[in-house]
Amino acid sequence: MLDDDRVMVELLRTVIEDEGHQAVSAVQMDDVPASVRADLVVSDLMPLTSYRADVARQWVRDLHDRFGVPVVVVTAHKDALAEPDRLGADAVIAKPFDVDSLAATIRALLA
Image 1 (spheres, rainbow, N blue to C red):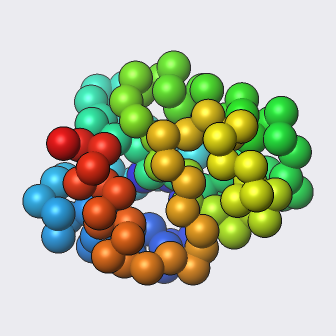
Image 2: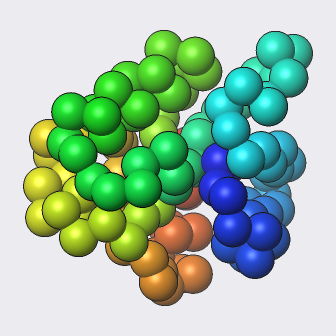
C-alpha cells in the first residue's frame, strides 16, 4: 500500500491484515523493495498535490506496470471520484471510506 498519511497506512494495514493478507507499506513507489511480490496494490493519488487526470492515469499505469496486479485507488480527489473509469484503476474508493466496503473490494479483486 502506498500512502503518505501514517494514520491511513495503519488503517489500511489493519483492513488488509484482517482479510488474511500481509501488508507492505511505503510512502513512494520507489520505497517498495524490488523483492516485494504483490497480489494487490492499494494507493492514494499522493504524488498529486492537485488533481490532473493525465498525471493520475499515468500514476495508475505505473503501478500496474511495476506490480502487474489489480490497483485500488483510495482518494479524496473529487475529480478522480467523478471519473473513476477514466483513471484506469481496478477500483476507486472515496476517502473517508467504509472499512467493510474496502474489505469487500479487496476480497472481490483477490477472488
